[in-house]
Image 1 (cartoon, one colour):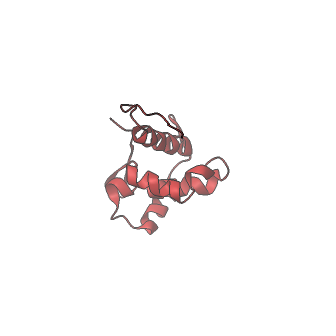
Image 2 (tube, rainbow, N blue to C red; image 1 turned 90 degrees about the vertical axis):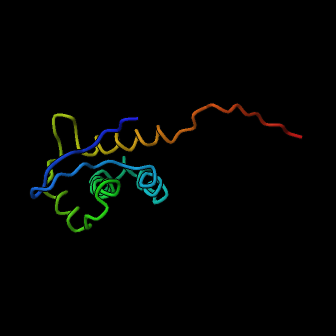
Length: 108
C-alpha cells in the first residue's frame, strides 16, 4: 500500500516523513492520537517530530523541533495537522484486521 509522505528539503538535506506501524502504535499507547482534537497546537509538533522515526531516526529531536519551527502551518494540501493525521489514518487502516478469518462466540 502506498502511503502519503511529507517531503521537503532543509539545510540542503532531503527529508521524507511518514509513519510506520510501530510509530503509530507508540503514539497510540502514549495517548497522543486520542488527544489530536483537544490539543492541536502541541500535538502538531509531537506528530511532526514522531514522523521522522520511519526514515530519519538518526535526526535529533533538537533538529526535528528546529525544522518544525520553520515549517508553515498550511499549504495548498491543507494544514500540517490535517496531513499528519491523514498519514496516521493510512497506517491505522493498514493495521486493521483484513477480515479473512470468520469467527463466532460460543457461550456455555
